[in-house]
Amino acid sequence: MASIIAGTGIGVPPNVVTNADLSRIMDTSDEWIRTRSGVVERRFVDPGVGASDLGVEAGRMAMGDAGVGAVDAIVTATMTPDYQNPGIAGLVQDRLGLGPVPAFDLRQQCSGFLYGLDLADALISTDRAGSVLVIGAEVHAGYLPWGDTWDIVLGHTDRAPTPEEYRRNTEHRAWSVLFGDGAGAMVLKKDPGSGGFSRARLHTDGAHFQLISVPGLGSVNRPYASADQLSADRHLPVMDGRGLYRAAVRLLPELILEVLAKESLDVSDLDLVVAHQANERILEGVRKSLGVDAEVVPSNIDRWANTTAGTLPILFHELRAAGRISPGMLVCFAAFGAGAHWGAMLYRVPG
Image 1 (cartoon, rainbow, N blue to C red):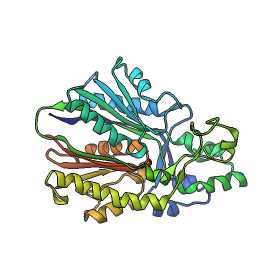
Image 2: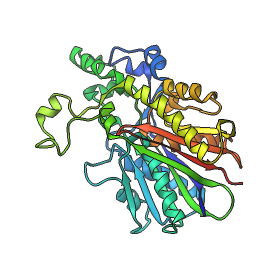
Image 3: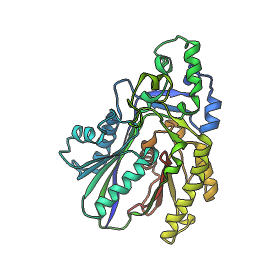
Image 4: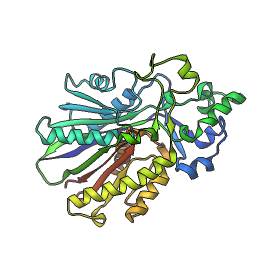
């Protein structure tokens, strides 16, 4: 018995930050960012707002859309939890008033929501749950190394950054301009009819760990947090952009074709690929490899940037709202991210 998407929702902050805004605090421009990533603007939360807050907003909307007041389990995915410990699943569960149902925290970064979908589908197909709320939520704002220049970015002051602030922000521009805050959610329910999730393949290869990682603030360090680590910026990501691009544009199409073949299908049977929104260049590489256009592999990275675990549900929710999701469509959810974790999952829209 398959599980279907019964409702979707998003939780997004109000503060829109454009590429021009970022050019005030670092050596960059709209053209530099746009041509390298496809990002035009992104959203950021106000101080004190965490991933759980956006997750609650998205979860509440998804449950309302599904017409349910309770679920049998919760799965949350984030790489930016409110606290080092615990994760956000319990916080979301409590604030949604769902009672002591099991709540899972996943840390698969950009592939987190995809892993969450597979877990939710497994719980439903094995009769361990009749409905599951899956949430991907990220607040990257606290992660970004912009210090006191946040007031400049958000338009709260007209001052210029100091030369040291400008230098440091520019040093980290290759990755910091790529991210935004946001959350998306889906309610999965058991359905005896046609359609629903079918074939899924998830992969992890720790040999690719160094493609993107944060070297500090972990138990391998003693103490796991120290002033020395912070001064050396070891609490910030280290990213191999070229390596990530090469891996994603090779592995994602391979896996999409693999799950299609397992169902005796090919690309011509595929109506839509809901892919992780890391970089427009990666999406274009996936399109080229599959021989399809942006109608099949759409993007919204221009408006939201990379919201990590939030990208898949935000994009799917927007496609539904735009009338792009119709009964009988074959959809493939796909993602690649740090770990390295990647996967693909087929979904037939019921009708």
